Image 1 (cartoon, rainbow, N blue to C red):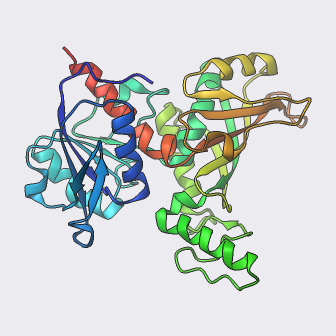
Image 2: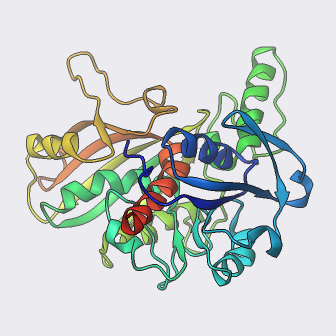
Length: 343
């Protein structure tokens, strides 16, 4: 952890402060001692007036409007694409920098898409808005970057196992409630997700496209290309929602232009920023969601040679979706910006 407490304090607004990511942003701002002059909690009108504890006091949530954004230096936005499209340009016009966690600006060629451990320089090219990538893409890029820096990466095949948190706090609550229903012998009826996630899994529920892929799977393709600067990278994904509360997992197959020795790959991944190696072949012990829940690091392991392709490796990773997959990445971007203006 590298606190930015040497930098000038800022007026910070969290847009979407009452959601799961908004709450994690609050916790991380305190934990990482981000320099704050004033903190404003913004949300939809229905959440206005809610009192939220922070640093020993109670902050009242305000309905987002132009007045609430006046004088703000930094907006951490996690309230959905339509909200960001409406309010991010207004915040920028009033002098703020917006770090946006929605999909609204990720593929805009004028907006940097940033994972600080992978492409930190991109953040400094912003024109007021910086996009936070999709959670699965953030976790994947941390593992891809140190390997692709050593040998040309040709193709990626990834299957994701995505937690309820990716659908928000209400989906997490529903998973808990419906799990109790099943254990009590009842029939689970989902209202937040399209199907019950209790003791179940289903293919990701984002909108299906004409090519048969869902929106989530295409996010991984196009966002990974942009972050890594590999416009022609071949990547295919299958995204699955699983009954885990807040940590995503991914099974990843990486094909390179030439053979990549497993031990070299293991050494690179174990030393890479943001990653933690959890790997014990003797006891069949590899990363699990419980290893990373509430933690910063993305865990990687079971790194092995693909038996079907001499130029390919297989690996497994797990990361906290709310933390590194969303809130932590956004605050790390803000810290990058602070480092540029620190006295």
